[in-house]
Image (cartoon, rainbow, N blue to C red; front, side, top):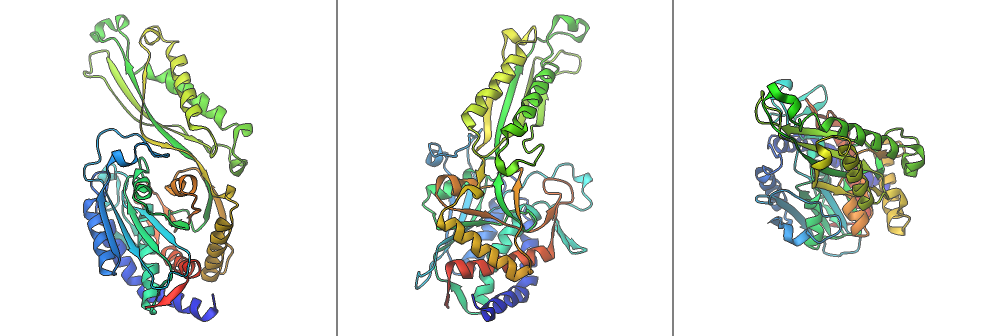
Amino acid sequence: MDQELSTRILSAVDDLFDREIEFLTELTSHPSTRGQEQSAQAFMASALTERGMEVDQWQIDAADIRDMPGFSPILGDYEDAQNVVGTHRPRTAKGRSLILNGHIDVVPAGPLDMWDRPPFEPHVANGWLYGRGAGDMKAGLASNLFALDALRHIGLAPAADVYFQSVVEEECTGNGALACLARGYKADAALIPEPFEEKLVTSQIGVIWFQVHLKGLPTHVAYAGQGANAIEAAIPLIAALHEMEHRWNAAENRHPDFAHHQHALNLNVGKIQGGDWTSSVPAWSVLDLRMAIFPGQDIKAAKTEIEQVIYDAARGNEFLKNSLPEVVYHGFLAEGYALSEDTSPTATAAIGALDRAHLATTGETLDRAAITATTDARFFGLYADTPALVYGPRAEAIHGFNERVELESIRRITQSTALFIADWCGVETL
């Protein structure tokens, strides 16, 4: 790309940046937790329509994706789970096609009194925009959209098909992105601006969500020795799973991209429920757990080992050995993905284009990072033969209190994205 065009694109992002932050503020104000994404998706659909894109808004049907690789099991149905895709069609179709993907769903805010300001009343302070989902990842949706706007601002458009995806379910299954594949949306590359500090993600772990259902023997607490406490019985099971976690993180078991990461795979006891009455020995408990796996780690073998660890620990309990726990999978059943292992010419070209865009924007080479989280990149990289570049702004306290995203980082990501689109897709005049 010539210097004159690069300068024009960078300046266009600057010209529109106040509007971008206004857009992000409005988008963040929609409390789009799981099952409540409809207003935010309507807002996105309207924005895409205003820009002249073909807009496809549909409710996900689990039957359409249940048998596809990468499907994660769900509890309940997908009532009101809607995806939105805006399609740009060029006149000339001379460039390479691109998916700009982002997720609209956000995690719950938690106790509101632990936030400095209400989580869905976003505000700007000291160069940061605060609010639940501002960083993870509505800033990325805004940067994707305003990168396209920047080209339009100077009379240009991508010279290839571009699919702008606003998906649900990223925070719990990824089935929203999978539904886009099922609907036929495919491209030469995908860009996902998740908030990983302006670095290119080379590898991401996989994630398994599972529940452990325990049964006890209820009795009045005065005769507790005659019962079996289903909550306390969970303690040795959790300890055994942590021992497994330690084994999986051993140096000899690590993926090469995580060779120097001492503890990339984390077990999390995310939720526990149980019992019915304070003075009754609890007859039941349910644990919700999350465990990570490395790229290339066989997910079926991982599930088998998880179950074996749970059953072996249960057999050490006098009651549970005759009433073994039930393991239920619900949510993430996600493989790890390593872009670093994609040596195809397409991946090499896409990474090179992003390298150039980042350098032109920041004056610095693009850093790489292996992350201990999962993203929707796996669907494109593992199941659609599409290199997926995860590259987004700097954010803090994602999934925590006072979540925030740095404004100048958003500007840089938007500029890099606009340059990347122009390089990868080519441009044509409007």
